[in-house]
Image 1 (cartoon, rainbow, N blue to C red):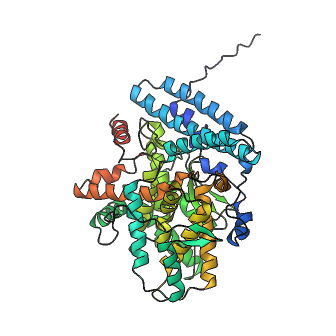
Image 2 (spheres, rainbow, N blue to C red):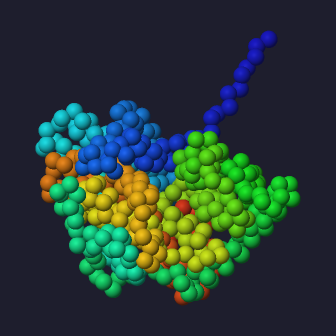
Image 3 (cartoon, one colour):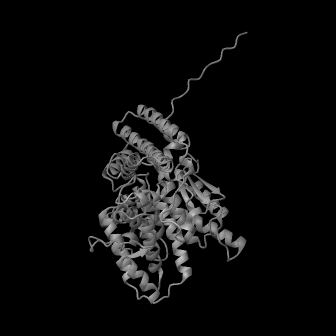
Length: 500
């Protein structure tokens, strides 16, 4: 007796299967994960003034083979996915989105090449060439400070600083910012002033657009709010009125919300507890909300609801809903061949705005919220790591003082440590001590953090536009996928995907 095995033909993969980060982790690539460095080891010596600028070593930049493989994997996926897509417009969107991740990998490779040349004594001509290639590609990927937003941020910061009465110990710091000062006999120039002294950021106070949009968003997420309140009430019954929500319970709450909105788990969105982290964040490569095991507990149900709306309601829900459209790349993040190519700048701004505008207190602009944009603006105009640091810790400290409050050494120590961390963020991946032998050359910066303030401005102005037109559907569409509605090309692609 013969046995005939019937071969079942293998079904071609769908576009969603091809580009989903669970199958193609490179589709959710985040460049900052490759820029882990030794900055913390140098902090105390740097603050003590033992050297002008730190020298970073990035252990993940020593071997570029994984990135080479990643570029190849993305290229193959782009070819396979675009071959599957009959619509030319959708093909373009898929191709540009995967190409953006490829370009990010090439950017990190340039940073690795720069580090090798710098540490191994490469000649200045080659160093300068690679540095400028990295600068240009970084600008294409992450942008440059926009003069209007830069000036508005500077005006906002100077208004904060000028609105106080200073104790003599604080007046010294203010005068140094206003007039410049010396650090070890080297000049630190006065902090930038705006070219346009009329530029202003959107206002939080008495903002009817934010109140209106907040009402729409709470209404659309009433089921999530009710669930969070119910879970909190159960925990209070079990643990008492002093209950606070620790990392394990935060995971439990997020999982319940995911089960509510994605009961069949078709999107692959998950929540994970990571023991050694402190942050609560959305991780695109994993399509997951990550809860740090060392995170401080959440103290109220209102705060938990706001965190859920930020990480799941915006980041996660846009992924789930985007995957339901006919353009599945909207579930991973849309990038287009446009002056501002990414979806993420707007999404980060929207998430933070949503979190703050449904809270009990009116948010306000602070030195910390303005810091990354101002610091990058300083560096792009020639300020090295030391100059940005010496400027930043002073304005951060002054921004927190009450009228006539005395400055203590404890305050200075705290703000210097915080300012150092802020400077590391915008210089990560680069070689800050190259500035010591490159007079007149603007330092290289990692501009991804421009997205926080720029995204806030984009989101708040867009909500004001929706309010002016009473466009309730426009508010709903904000959560329909990972796109930027202020980018005409991305808005067009979103509307086509919803109509298909």
